[in-house]
Image 1 (cartoon, rainbow, N blue to C red):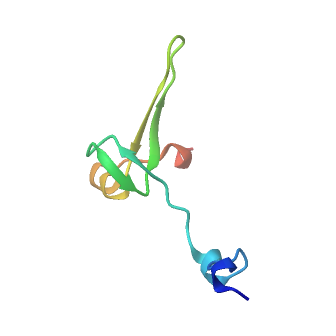
Image 2 (cartoon, one colour; image 1 turned 180 degrees about the vertical axis):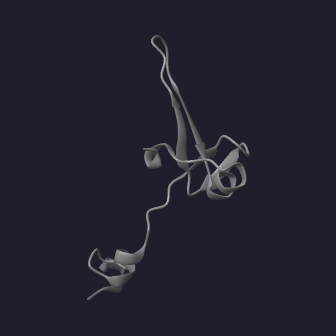
Length: 72
């Protein structure tokens, strides 16, 4: 079989099961792009667009930020 047509990480491989999905985006705290971004705050407005503030792992630790999805 031609190797270029084979999936390097098939869905049932051990590597696929242990890999965590990483999001890449803008960190509102250090004002730069980074991997491992999590949403910290969602600001909804009645009129106009809302706003989302996200933070990377190091900024979450440094500023003791709790991700929005992890709050009770």
